[in-house]
Image (cartoon, rainbow, N blue to C red; front, side, top):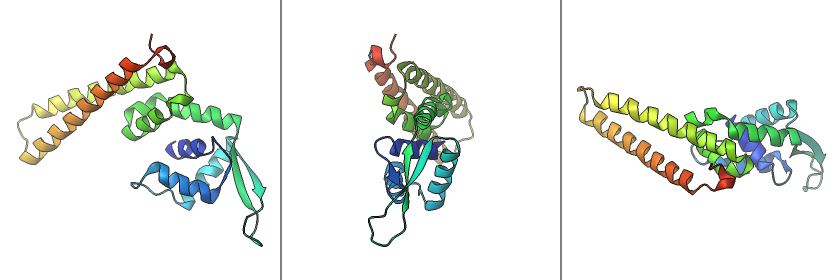
Length: 175
């Protein structure tokens, strides 16, 4: 789903050929992952099969080079992208949640509110789990340090998301 979300997002503005998609996908997902040729074209093929993208031939700017495929997002692809972004399961995975958060302008206010509530619910469950782990007496200094750091991360994210929720206006899903 992340691959599809990345590709469809990159096609929102203008149609693009594979090499340009590859370059932009690498910049979008960052240094932790590589969006290689196989991954890109496998994703494009799946999206084509679903009717989410359409491919057309375009003359290469290099004289004598073969034509290249240019990919365009379809209306079905735009709808699919909104579904990917609004998927409540995204709240359970940090990377997917932050990808959805970065694309919130593409989904409804109600979907935004729901995702935010689900993420906060997940963070609460994570906090409870960490409290039960912290209560066990068998910690090494290293495991205690890791647990302290993770608890701080959960608390910081929770505070940040609460601030975002407080700043949401009527168009952002605040009741």
